Length: 369
Length: 90
Image (cartoon, rainbow over all chains, first blue to last red; front, side, top):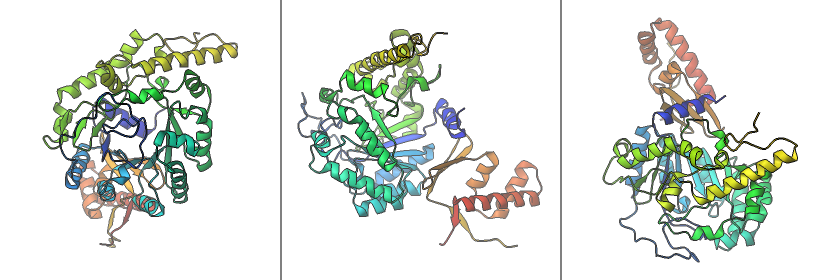
């Protein structure tokens, strides 16, 4: 049975009451991750075209505070501060403080590599809802192959100690690339050592401006198999968690995203601008954007479309924003999701066969009775 | 009547009223509390005078002022004990 909070959030999402918002404070970053999807050139990214020139300056502090006021008035509860590296924004602490004064449950997305004793103290004072840190390896050479920043792994490990000492709630995340695929269990062990949950994500995001260089780092079939056949590795986006008739995700119904220059997007993954905070109130965009209405329709219809069109649909999640960005068709699951679904089905079938049970049904994902 | 210390909502508790119910997130403890309609009313007016809150409740819910005052005081004390309300030092 759902918790009272989950029930309430479900009701709110069905009535298109935005609960979640994220603000990309900056594209600046202290690392240079090879798969970074921000529309800026980082080291060794093989772009076909240079990133688009910024059309307008970043939002000022006062503009960001106005955004916070608007989001609060709309009823947004969970606010993610992200980047780039959010903490390197010159006014990060002022912005986070303003968010706290407005009673948001703050999630700070960070790579952790800039967290020192004093930063950790300030985070403890801020008392965010959670801090989410991305790990890219279980040792320095693996992590640095991706972050292209010497000492990043050691700084991250130091950050985990500092945050643990202060009792902060930390979640670890790992995007599974071919660089890190041999270290998944060691990364999980790092989380276990600190008692921080670790979440693995096998899907790579192409750049905001549609460049596909991140896909060069895609993990092997074997790594994806390991991910889905090893108990204890948490994978997000399980289609089993979705009931028939439910929305695919919260895009258009419960979430909204703001870029450093004030563009409003349906979510972090659906990159089309539905307006700019310098031109419109966010509530007006939320209520009146024709594109957002289209997004809602996609979100309502996508689970049914997946069921009709994908062989392994019981194992297939799909991010419509990623599909929109990559193919222009949000209803067509991206090839990464189809590949993962195929592997997941094979893993499920092999596990059931090994247990002497009948194979899984591709429609329900469970055994035929 | 002893009015007690003036209270304010703690900044360590994030909250919003969603679909008519206040959701309180105790960030330091990692706990969540969802209030019912009456609890939400008290929470939203918790920084006001106890008698004013009780008066509004008595009017809206057709209970006596004394009953409303006793219930409101008890709930405010619970909120203070949980850390959701803290003493206003301004």
